[in-house]
Image (cartoon, rainbow, N blue to C red; front, top):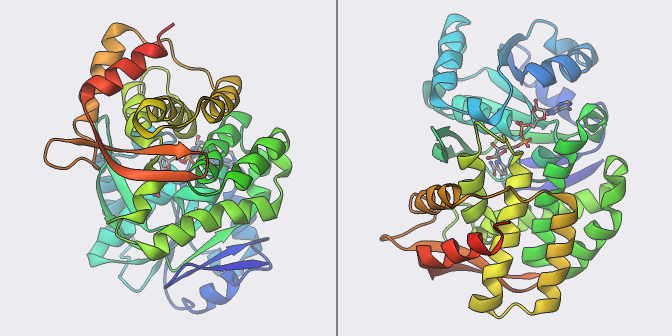
Length: 352
Ligand SMILES: NC(=O)c1ccc[n+]([C@@H]2O[C@H](COP(=O)([O-])OP(=O)(O)OC[C@H]3O[C@@H](n4cnc5c(N)ncnc54)[C@H](O)[C@@H]3O)[C@@H](O)[C@H]2O)c1
């Protein structure tokens, strides 16, 4: 069992049975437990959790519709009503069992309910394990605008059990892979190379690699929990990626990681001119991303609409679009102010 110190909580990496989850549940012996799942984690992950821990036999289960388009306020309202019906108090425990959609919305629901109810995250997707379940960002989207409403709020603990990945569809493994690549691109060239070398066996992911990817995020978050500076590096690929994800939310329905991978490709392209990224590094990034993720067939209208969405990005200040660029693999600069025109030209460069 690997234990990572995340400040006021711990991330445990290894089998759930060997973790301190049972101990944590014992601390909530007289409390009610609520497990939030989506359709897929209800089918593939819930029964193994409940049958492994007697303390969960009586837990209430709240089932949410699967998919990013359901990470919305209306869905949160429904859960708050259910929690009220179950007479859940601030001293009870919410367990988020799912990918990033569930840990984001579940964390948000718990944090706002009765001014803050305890919650733990048990991520079941690769993306959730290496990224979404850690760092304390919780929230929902507002229509197409990603994560517009939310709060910083830490779970009591995060328990990562890679056996949940056995049922995760391959497209979702690749989604998580994109965030692992990002962690290498922004902070550690060796890590980037290791992920590129080992990704083809993504189902057999080496625990050390997973832990090193988690450490990149955890270290940045610990230094800057409220994203005032260094933590912004984790947004590499996300200025463009969120616009792509939001734009195609109801059509292509790209996975989060897929959209971020294309976002990283375009932001790396912009980095050539605006951060002096060398051509060799760019080609290496381009080769990896384009051989694993399809670049959507952008039309002029798609590009106009995505560039328009950039104006509403959470990272912006005073009307400027602020983004991250990489001067080389393993180094990331943040708060770079760029005009919409730069993004417009970059999107156009990838238009088929
Ligand atoms: N809070 C953060 O810091 C942070 C960071 C990165 C991403 N995110 C958010 O995370 C979300 C993306 O996460 P995600 O890719 O995990 O999305 P997700 O939760 O929608 O999961 C992707 C798909 O995999 C399914 N699934 C999950 N676990 C499964 C399993 N074990 N077996 C079978 N199917 C399974 C889900 O039902 C869903 O269909 C986005 O909303 C993104 O904004 C948040």
